Length: 194
Image 1 (cartoon, rainbow, N blue to C red):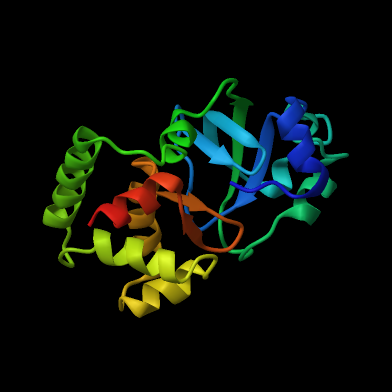
Image 2 (cartoon, one colour; image 1 turned 90 degrees about the vertical axis):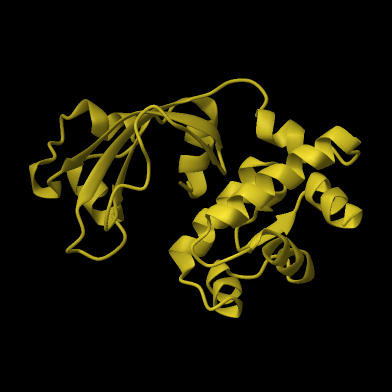
């Protein structure tokens, strides 16, 4: 999830603890922690709501830092036929372990062997063949490139490609940017070892 303008600051300070999103399907799962541009948040609940039934006096309107129900509806983006979701969350304090992992530029032989094993498993389980090294190399060659453009280079659909890159990110090998991705120091060190 991304937060724009004053919403980003509101989430960072803990003032905003709810958001309304219009999505084709829920993009977050209750209980999971997500990295956002405002810090890490843990999802407390996700439920579909009817925009016309949102009340001016609903506590969630204020938790989302909206003036009233009309303000909530006015700010919804996306296809009007899509459902609207109310997401409640809280800010997660402390360092992100993936950030610390990604910042590690020096890899031991054990680290490399672990990465090789994990990436080989991702390749093995893939329906479209080995992909991990090729995607890392493409991100290195084309940082900050739209995910859709990178996916097209592999003749892949964008959602599936983004899901795969998230797997690399979970191993500390990539960073997500506003547009596209870049290799982390750990990702660069891994490619250098090949």
